[in-house]
Amino acid sequence: MFWHKNQFYLVVRACINSKEVSNMIFELPREIADLVAARNRLKAAYNAAGLTFTFDGNLVGDIGEAVAQKLFGIALLSKNSAGVDGKITLNGIEKTVQIKATGVKGGAAFRKTETKADYLLFFSFDFEKCSGELIYNGPESNVRNHLSANEKTGKRRNEWTDGSQKAVAFGILKSENAKIQEHDKIPILV
Image (cartoon, rainbow, N blue to C red):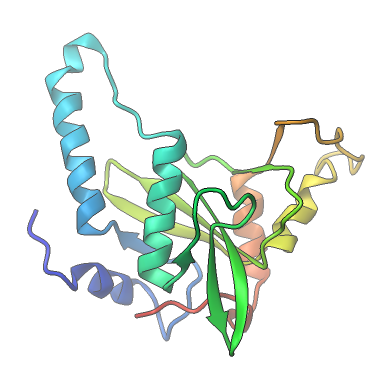
């Protein structure tokens, strides 16, 4: 695969209209595409053994943060920043951003933290197609509100325990994203 240095931005630009960032689908940046290609060569070489070399955990999250930096200009913070992955200045005001990602169409998992971000970016990656989709871009509080109540019964969910995680389903993230006005989203750079 040949990549021009601006190809990532050109593909993103082709997938959005007038800087709207809803339902944005994009090809992964060259550096990440190279990683996926190497993984695919490993999968092919060890196919008979059943090894899948699945992208998961921290690697997918790190890919999400790298993509957020490229697409939105997020200034990433150190890994010691619980609940906040980066910052961005919007209309002269510094805002915090939490970045989450999945490679399996799963929801966004949250840990109990004292610090809450102003914004949440949630990406879903299809590593077989070397593409990604922005699922949610908006206030983090809109998503965190779904952590406290069970969607089916309306009853309060179990309280947080040390080290526990709670998740917001993929469909809820898409639904919440559709409700957000463009002026309440982080604008894309391209």
